[in-house]
Image 1 (cartoon, one colour):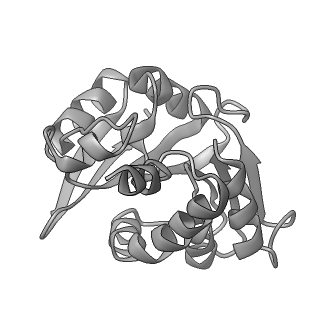
Image 2: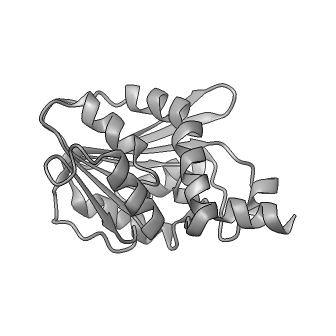
Length: 203
């Protein structure tokens, strides 16, 4: 149980050899959810986009493919994640893809910089989630979208017992938090068995 707990706690902040294994697992395992969720957004060419908790960088690569002449930014608290994301996107790094180490609590970006912000399987780990949502709103352009993509986890799930620092939110809770943070036209999309996309718009 201790080894399992250590492995899955690397979801939040991948470190060392076990963290690198987790990043490979996440790049593969999150693909179906990410592809489905991004298809709901209506991404345009030329967008400037940010993926918070970018992990191994697979979402950054997908965003780049979905928007010609895009600029794609990624941020993650994990040094291992930043290194992996840069490696996965090496061809476009420094040209169209930019990856930084940092936290959702204090995003190192300008006000009204992004057309789209995404968060794939990561809001479970954000401290002070309402404050983080305010930061997302700050960096979005008016009319910009914020897409939270999650696999729905019950509050008493085994995952929250195994993974340190994890908080489970229902799609309805996330919608309420987005509404309270000032987002509008927030919609919940679901796909069986357990995928959910919560998408809000910056007014």
